[in-house]
Image (cartoon, helix red, strand yellow):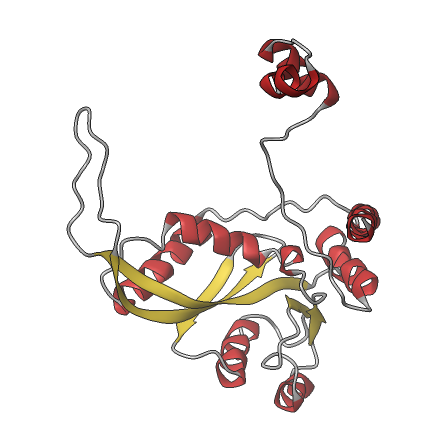
Length: 250
């Protein structure tokens, strides 16, 4: 920026001056964030419903954050790794082999941070209900189970409606369209991807690694802390929406 000012505006300032200016005004041009404006007409209502479960869950109820991590790939490098050594970093080939995929179904207990997970070959209503049946079976039939999930057709159809009719203590809370950020299990998916889903020899190896990681996670599970209220979220998103509209008009 100092070079630009000198070249185009004939203003001579040091890079230290620019740095201090950015710090004073809390400007961080080197950083970028992401956003997506949901087009769900019931966005505000769904946000209030889900955030309410995070901040003030019903007494005695279980709150689960559910989603599928689909097409998880078992990948390995085409040649063996060159190990770390004195003065040398670990090295790997730029290309890799694909050994197949699996689909991870996971339910995060929002209150204690534990995770129930299972891998399936396919991602259909059949697998979804099989997984949910196994999960809710671990709780007394009289205990309320609130499940936060997205509104895919595999999660919301007549077959699922029949299943809910047989499980009156279970209630589904659908996230707004295009708003996976509000589903806490997505944070767990990010962590397990970075820490466990690497250097895999086969799909069987991938599935075992996922299972072992979840088992280890549950030994010292801690809940993610949600602090933002629904009102605070709506204010921020409304501000971003106004900026988006203004930029489009320009």
